[in-house]
Image 1 (tube, rainbow, N blue to C red):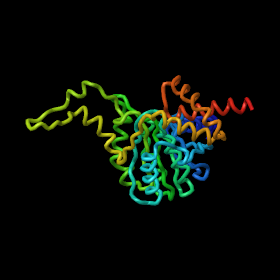
Image 2: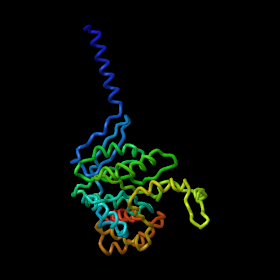
Image 3: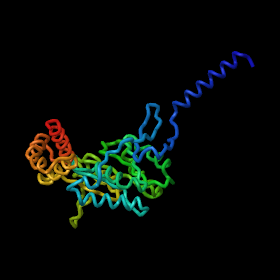
Length: 292
């Protein structure tokens, strides 16, 4: 074999290696002992990887106030899931900043010692969910696939992909995987006044939704458990402020003195959400510690 031929073969092997590295690769299982929460990310090459979340927020179920009914439903469903009993995919909808995402994180912290794990997936990557399920299927841990702030515009491919996933493999064939999604839209799609024109009326007064409405509700119907969150009243907002101030080390006198400032803070932000209450508490305690 000539030296020139050997050089050509070596260059060909290098070229093939570069081509193979650029092609999408099967999703590999990570070292599950590294973390209890993971993010699914797509590389520029198209390769999907599961990245460990090194520091999960240390929020506890007891830290979440004024959402007791919602907390009971989510905690019960999660406990059933971890214990190997039947449980549902969950859609959490409603006002922003009312604790939807925090509640899921709190459940993870509560049940991680019993084998609960969480994988966060962006809506753009939902079409890869079957690959994720294949990686975790058969493992002893229980996995929540978490989609935060989920909503779709008309015609997005992830919408129909998620419909198929919820109606098939996730719920029926993989008992150690559930989908938990949060959204500000109950039906996950924009709703327009013109959609109401598709309703039909029968002679006996019955009202039937048209195809447009049916399509919009068909995805949310695939979630077995709906949990709705509502804006907080002033008293509820102040109770949440007091909770966060107490958690940050405020004395009772400081908590009472902070009430007027907390109301002004909410007025300036245009919201009395739990997120705004938490942000105020951090600002207040930061200023208090600086003045001490």
